[in-house]
Structure formats: C-alpha cells, structure tokens
Image 1 (cartoon, rainbow, N blue to C red):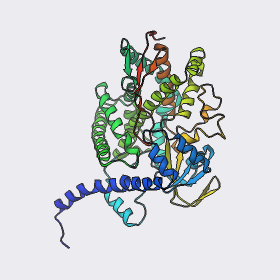
Image 2 (cartoon, rainbow, N blue to C red; image 1 turned 90 degrees about the vertical axis):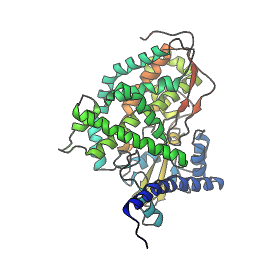
Image 3 (cartoon, one colour; image 1 turned 120 degrees about the horizontal axis):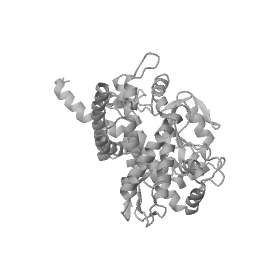
Length: 448
C-alpha cells in the first residue's frame, strides 16, 4: 500500500469527512425513513410531514397505535406521562450516538467527526451532556435565568418592545417575523450576553442559518450551509469572548468567563459551547413562540377579546400557546440499559422519540385538547420546555418575553389582522413561522 504524504492525506480527509458526516447523519436516515414511510411506517410518515407541514394528524395516528409505538428507526411516544418518564429517567441519556457501535458505519462516523466543530448536538453542549459535566455547566448558568433574575429584565424588555412597535407605526402592512418577532428576543438575549448592538443582525443570521442543525435528512446544500454558519459563529464567538476577557461587563458571558463552581470554571471549549447554545437557544425558540402566538390569537378572536378584558390571564395564555403550538416538536433519548416505558420493554441502546407537541395534546390529561383556551386550568402541565434534568434553562425568560411581546403588540395594534402568505419554517424539530404578514390596522394606541 502506498503511503500518502501527510499534506495530501489531510486534504483528502478535509474533503471526505464532511461527505461521510452528511451521508451517515442525513442521507442514510432520510433514505431509511422515506422507504419506511412508503411501507406505512408511522415514524417515517411523521418525519416526512413535520417539515413545514402539519404533523398533528400523523401524531394522532401514532397515539392511536398505543402509548409507545415501535417505528423503523426508534420507539415513539405521544403519551404525556410516558414522555415525562423518559425525559426524567436515569435509564436514558440525551441524544443518539451513531458512532458508538463497533461497526464499519460506527468507525466511519467516528473517523469523520470533526472534534473541533461546536454545534448544539456536539459535546460539550448542554443538550447532549450528562452528569456530572451537565450538572456543573447548568449550575454556572442557572443563576442568570432564575425567575427573579428574569423579572428584573421585564422593564427593559417592555422598553425594547415599545421601541420596535414605534418603528412599525405608519406601515399599513408588515412582515411580522422579520420586523418584530425576531428583533425582540435577539435584542434581549444580546444585551444579556454583552453583544454590541451593531453585531445583533449578525447573531440573528447565524441563528437562522444554524437552526436546521437539529434536524435529520438535510440536503447536501443545507448541510454545508449549516456547517459553514456554525464555523463562522464559532469564530465570531471566540473573538467576542476574548473581548469580554479583556473588558468584562456585568453581562452573562462576562460572568461565565469568571464563574467558578467548587473552584472550577469552564475551559475554552466548554465556555464556547455553553455560550453558543445560550445565545442561539435564547432567541430562536422565542421567535417561534411569538409568531405561533400571533397566529393563534388572530385565529381565535374571542380568546384575544377575553385577554383584553382579563389581562391577568396573559401568563396562562402564554402556557396555552406553548401547549397547543410549541416551538419545539420533539426530542430524543437513548436507553443506557434495558428498561420499560409505559409497559413496553425498551432494550439498551434503543432510541426513544418523545413527541412534545403530541404529549401537549394528550386527551388523558387535557380536556378537549385541540381547543385553544387562554383560561385552561392546567395549561402549565405541558412539556414544551422538555422535562427532567434537561428542562429548558430559558423557560422563565421565554415566558416573560412571550407575555411582554404579545401583550404589547395587541395593546398597541388591537386591530391587527393576519394576511394571506404566512409560511412555516421548513425545519423538522423547530416549529414556527418563516413569514407572517399582517395588517396593523388604523387604530394604534400609545404604550401604557
């Protein structure tokens, strides 16, 4: 066998590894799922329907098959108790490790893995780490996202919302996702993380480009676009952290740079992974919450009218929006040992897909589950923010931003109407609107 010179071998590796990552992480699962869907597999059909379409009819077919459905690729559950059990159990860990098996495919995946690349599904991201590392990372961030800390941000969030709504005055029609739903949360999270105002549009572009990184089945073009966006973001984040080390402020990232837990702080890789996830997750899902909320409230004018006369219902209304049309459709866990879920044996190594959006409509828990009711007594029982040790760190912040953003919008523009042309994002995990054109209406009230 001819031994290639190191520079030549490195060039081959650089060209070949992305192809292998895409093939094993996207092309192969997509091909398997599509073939399974043609044969009637509900999981395959569910994955096909979730990309920008309406997956809820398929979710109900999965529910009709029992509390735990055995799909071609994984077990699937729509039961709220079963979802909570999987997400909270020590019998499961986050994510799926296709390279963990000692097989040819496993070895190929391990060879192709870019250990320098940081993404939301790459360790040491909070999404895919487990104790003790996860516990340490989470403790360092939790204090900033406590309910008390978030309430201190409410007044500033209201100011930002009012400034954005002032900018819409005089415009008869507006594309609301671009002009408001994205700008409110990205401005808030940027200020929390010490990102200069001039950099906020760049952060927004990174978040939008990288959002599909959670999905399976990306095309080659989408995959390359996502990897390029993550690489650019990693470069920018490294430079931003260096600025904060030199000139620390009172923002979260400055605190994370200096934070210590039991005398130990985050190393550079851990810091970038944690900061990157908080930055991206800190606004992407809230964009979806705001857009989904506007659509639901305009589709149910009687519920919006009730909020006008009973504004104390706004916090509950946000939970009802999260329940009925959550920003994240599903998540997955891998069994680390043989176990049982809702009476169904699950072998070690098996993947279980928990459909958060379907669990939120479990008829065993929610009366008339497809009805939108801002006064629903148990709206908070949803799992839109996941559950267990990976419960969303930013839940309190998202709820506050959702309440402030939607309440201020409809107080200022009570005659707002949605227009034809709304379009859902073409992501399989995140669910929200890519575009949401609206007519603001003639009446415009001044901020309270």
